[in-house]
Length: 154
Image (tube, rainbow, N blue to C red; front, side):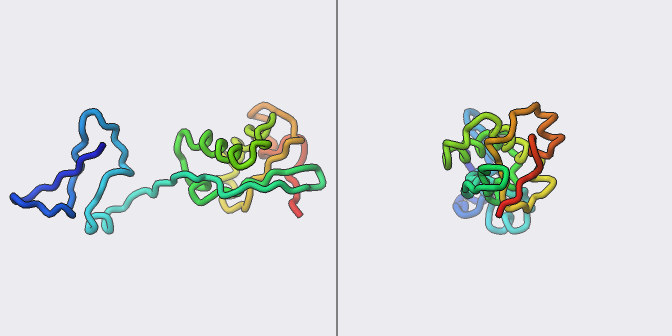
């Protein structure tokens, strides 16, 4: 719980806040602090990228075989949170439990870690269950596409 207190006269304006006062037992979370309307407009801040990270998923057929297209949200394209990879993969599996097969999470993790930087505007991240399970270094060396080139989606 975060308690925000104002400074001033004997009858403070409850709509104006200043520096947060945090109770000893409460964890701090900068996304939960409140700023006054005047300071919110003038204080630059880093946007918080929150779930959902995945908009939707869709299966398609390519010349090489089945491919799961994963369509990230704006948050999914930009978040840098430490646990966001696991949370976003859970969203993928929640949207389609058949995605949880050997090698698919590894392909997804490669896209999450590297493809977002290399091609941040790519429409979808494509995962294929027919690709071999490989080491992380081989996954990176093959640009997240072990066992063949990136498929072309019709």
